[in-house]
Image 1 (tube, rainbow, N blue to C red):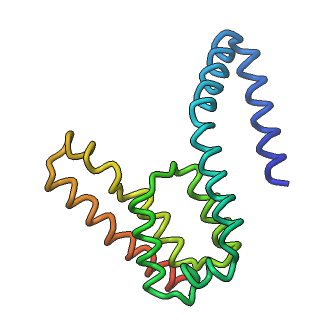
Image 2 (cartoon, rainbow, N blue to C red):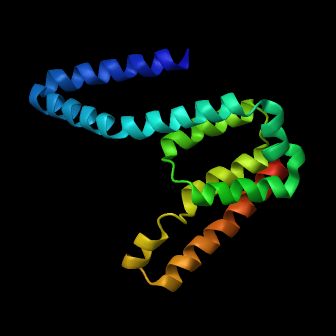
Image 3 (cartoon, rainbow, N blue to C red):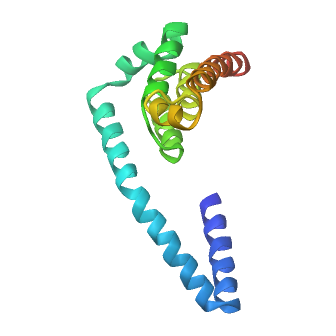
Length: 159
């Protein structure tokens, strides 16, 4: 139901924009389409990857690996995985929801998503080119520790 409200509001606002300035609205729509085309390949690859993982890994396996019962070992596994993989944020949250539906624990997913956003092992070489090596390692280390704190708070609030 909420989606219909948002789509209706968006349609009315788009119509108002079109009535005010057709040229600008058309340029904006073309720009939005280009952005969508640029994001689509990454999005499809990640969705395919999630589909394969969920097809191969049954909910019991996910629960054992990163379920609530996996404790801090599962939190660390989620945090390490999130630190290493390079997934855009708009894909991370739906993926986290799918993992939760299939048996993952809240603390483990909190660690995964927060390290995904704050820690970048894969991007460290590029980051070191623009920032000092020490700053890059410090930023990533603090991001990792803060992600563990986030997982702890999520476990405390939800648990």
